[in-house]
Amino acid sequence: MKKSVLAGFLAVTVLMACNKDKEIISSLQDHNATMMEKGYRFGEAISLPKEVTDNAESVSISFGDAETSSLTVDPQHFKLGDNDLTFIIKKKNGEILRQDATINVFASKPEAVLSYEIVAEYPHSVESFTQGFQLEGNTIYESDGQNGSSRIVKYTLGSTTPIAETRQPQEVFSEGSTVLGDKVYQLTWQNKKGFIYNKSDLSLVGEFPYPPSMMEGWGLTTDGKSLIASDGTKNIYFLDPADPSKMQRYISVAGHENIFDKLNELEYHNGFIYANVWQTAQILKIDPRTGEVTARIDLTPLAQKHTKGADDVLNGIAFRGENMLVTGKNWPTIYEIKVK
Image 1 (cartoon, helix red, strand yellow):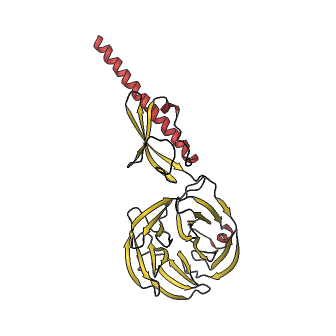
Image 2 (cartoon, one colour):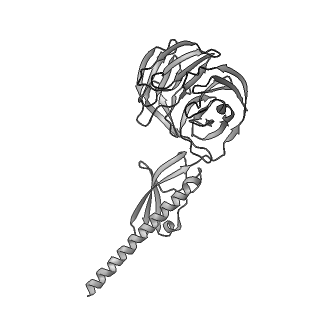
């Protein structure tokens, strides 16, 4: 009889402990879900629900390759954007509970909203499905997409007649491009490789595979030291020009209240990265050190003139001095704007 009572008591105790563990984990899951939209900023402490703090001797965070007992959002362990991690809860009885979570980190300051005025207009071929767009001197280097009509082309600003061009095979969908030194680099969308051309005549001189972390090829620019690429996510990758298959580092892009994905055509100018957000009329100004969006430009009035569907969207950023050149896929016009 005594053994039966003891066994029953132990069973109840184990059941209560299991239920308590479920309560702790459930409360953490619910709390994390409510914090996803609100997010955190650097320097803020990660909050935990009462069910966790009341039953925990300690809480630490694992990032897979690193672990910290600090519950402060710091740039040593966190990056802007979403951070996948695991909470490790050591209960007061020594047992360990683990719970995966995503912590969103936003920029500390709201981004500025910049205005603009149109100062000039130039012709642009409506046949050009613009993916990459750069001005050097008075020459536009443009990468045009779509299977069967992809190409790299250069022409004089104010004209649509090619000076030189190289067309891609049917199976290639060209994406972003940039000029670095005497070479032009070009991405492809889902072909998992890029091309290298001589700048003078756009003759093909090489190819390179993407780093494994790049999902696709979208936008491309350069700061003169690295190739800077986007892949349609929130991430921007810095690649080694000597071997673009090697990633040097990456950043994730976030503003004060949003994580921005679908980053597309890129341009580097005066220490900042400018990025089109696909299927929007927004251009973001991004700090390349951190991924923080410091400003944005809303070009809705321009986009509404030319965007009739999902394809003919704003996509193309270059600089002419301090003025910005913008265009879109199959647009008839390149606009020179003064950003204020």
